[in-house]
Length: 451
Image 1: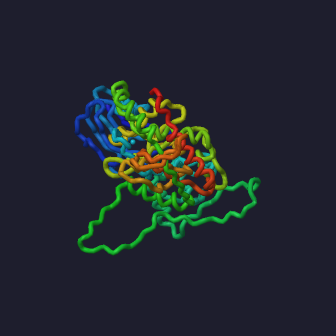
Image 2 (image 1 turned 90 degrees about the vertical axis):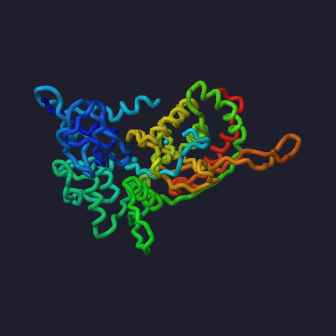
Image 3 (image 1 turned 90 degrees about the horizontal axis):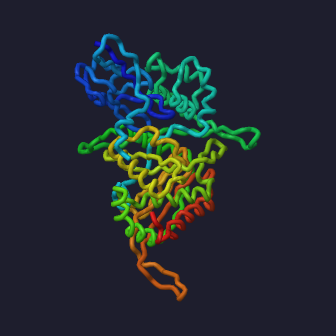
């Protein structure tokens, strides 16, 4: 018999490690090709690792809650043959699981407020350069955390690593940061040639610990891994960005009537529903092209104007958590392409089959709180982006209709839109004008449009 070394597969750009959350096969179990061996979690998504070969599981090299680097051996499988097989990992993670599928069918689609941390930060590659002369290897994730927490090279080198070859894992560096005697300081990267303003570091604390009184009948529920990430991400976003929110009310009667007219024929032709979400995303994409200074990130005193328009759509998961899959280059897709992308990401979100790349590189986030009957909301910015737009439920209201013969009262389909934005770079004039432009695109929908 031969031994096959199963490596942790590549999981997308900038994802260098994962945590084992569950073993589905135990040593001695017979494995068929494509059987799921274990479940893993990154700071983006949870996924499954299938076996590329048929055989018997001989050994698990990592236990639950241990962190594994991409490319390391996670299991030994006994297969037919006479020599040890080379350690070969699949080139793409979970591609076979996602292939048949090609954030809902609800009128407003099951979307929610986002909260998944995006640790890939604009300018992080350049900012991590001073860690390149370290005494050992550090993953991009560890370098990003060290940069955000203001760790020096000496501090990073002093952390005891529990990973392979004594590498520092995400858990190691987070534990070190939590145990430091003083809160880390944010170092603002400001070029002396560009500004002469004094820079005073601010102290940013992680999620505050509040001691509450617990009575005998209260139930204490520990947050799961994803909820902890959401909690930390939301607190840091509010601490980093001064939030401002603007509102507009839009008359979307033409859009609603158009969708009602085409939805049956569209479903018969395409085999899936067309929801309001792709219509909203198309309007947002057009407005971002009109106002590119909303499609930005902020790094210290630098504004990073994004070339691509990548729209994240906040989606609710069956377990109550939230995730933000991203539609890449949304402005380049047709309405049919947007609809298929929305449905695909929503279905794979619910099935827990998103790839790590599906949640990366977002430049702007959209959330549909109308799916829960809410008329408006003030969502928290999904860092490192600078703005997030929410739409409320569409309701029929009496409204004033202006005609060439005078004003009249009519029943119209009305909807509130809200925009939360980072006041460091986006002022009320820009934020408010951008939001009104989105509403204008929705209000002026072509009732005769052919899809």
